[in-house]
Length: 238
Image (tube, rainbow, N blue to C red; front, side, top):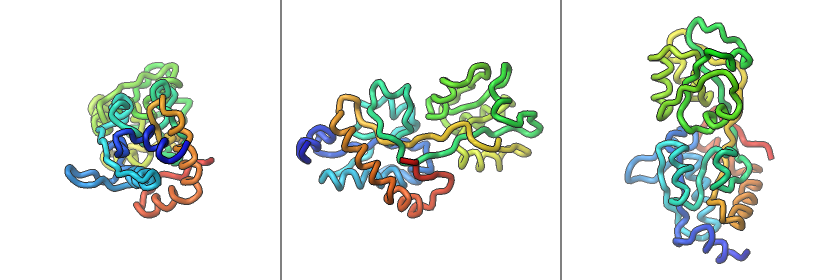
């Protein structure tokens, strides 16, 4: 596919509409109203638009669930890849990984991930986050207590005295400082695979995006992590 044909498929309006998940502070560090967003994800989108030779505009969503549901509104989405979203979105492989674990309250008897998935264990989680989607598929006995957003999931964990809070490790570190005596379970239950998606019908575009990600993993992603001084993330393996 030549560049003009690629533009016609991937950016049919003449502008690349890039969807951002504003709740992921690791990838979107700032997104003030009326100003350009700052962070790894916006810079990835800007580089894609530069290579296409089109301007970029950002479509902002408060959480990943709304971003995935709003696929008709965007051309590319910077979001955690998940099989439950793959019916409508063609994902690249991951360009970046973020570890997910659990915050445990003071005095918790839980010592390992095996202790988590047991009857009666209640886990607070942000609804439709990538790790919520993963836990829906993998937990057999524990109960997920969903909340609309990361802050709401933390408040539910505290207010309802739940057994664990699922989240991205960097966020859990800050939450731990607000919950006296809490601790983060060592290790990870998964790593969120941050990828680039496009509407499922755009197969040629998906192949081009995959080539971009393959190249970005060899230098650009590490450069952006350093530029924005983001901790708790790593370049995904090829």
